[in-house]
Length: 470
Image 1 (cartoon, rainbow, N blue to C red):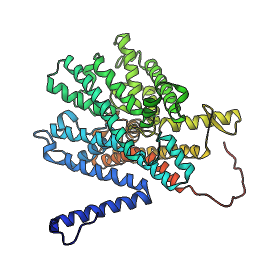
Image 2: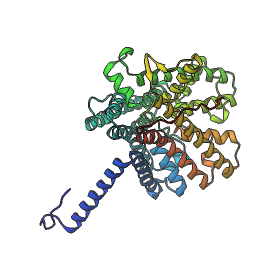
Image 3: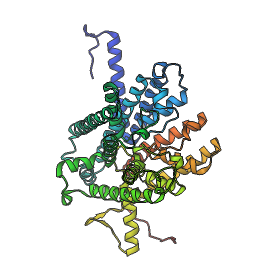
Image 4: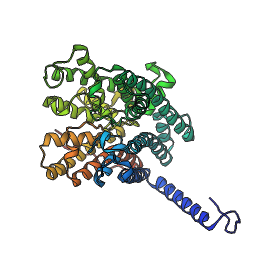
């Protein structure tokens, strides 16, 4: 960006502004070239700071309500990381402007995560050799590595189109439920964005509990969450190849197969554990029980919406929910957790070891060893974050470990389901949980990118020595 020093059409103020923008652009370029992972962290931190300030403004709060700084920061972090945990009621604490800010934050958080993941992958491709670039190209299903602009356009167009369809159906659903037109339209748009981006925020004080029999509302929300959790690479492959399994790449097969298995396992076990629970499903009709089991199984891996009180669930159901939240959704998606492909790769490695196979094979493809190393690193990183977070929050709050563990996993996995602990935490605890949500949103991708960027070719090899394992 070059500005003539003596141009009669450019004032000194404009010249200074152009200089600032050019300097900012050069700084971003240097960070992106040197460390795309660091750029991701800075970008998320900057966006969270901006929305924290907006939510802290008096205009964002409902009349007569003053929002504390820690609650503004927590809500902004939860919205940008599309988590859904809240310390204050979204319906009563925030004004319409505040709810609109949360809506925009969820949209930016969802789209930003997808586009940032794609840009990170392309940046890794530029840093590595031709082989690695081809791997990145295949993983994101890109025709040429130079098609970044068109790729991002497809992401935005697909996301907005899906949200528009969801908003239309949900608006009709809320109209059928008896809401006025403008209220139904606002709720339809809000839930569409919240569902597809796996945000988990709800503008109703009672959430979705009053709509347990409104299939026209619950089913689109569940489908939106499920579609958003698959990941953009999977959606693009399905868009191009349809349901022809043989034409799917390995990533798509692993995501869809693992997601289907986890969905049905969670569905069946939730019904088995809660069928006779008098505080949840016992008195519900059979059809409603079955649908709520499906709804819960979809939501526990990132959606964050609930039809029953989490504190009323059986302890074994809470443990199942912990495990499913930690697993999360697909890579390069709005879902959190360690990702289903990570879980699938580690499971296949265990299966190969049990069979005595030297290679990890899935769908007639050999999974490289570096993918297994990254998968193990991601799981260990996630477990470490959860362990450290639980230790800190137990010491700060004095709450039982089972409540803290549930809230920390929900925050790290950006799920949003809650046992009510978030609102009970002291200010320091809210900041800690905010940091956990931020790490959960960018941690897995950042660590994977950092590991890929550090890979280098050695010209020598050390002697092998096998330690005792197990």
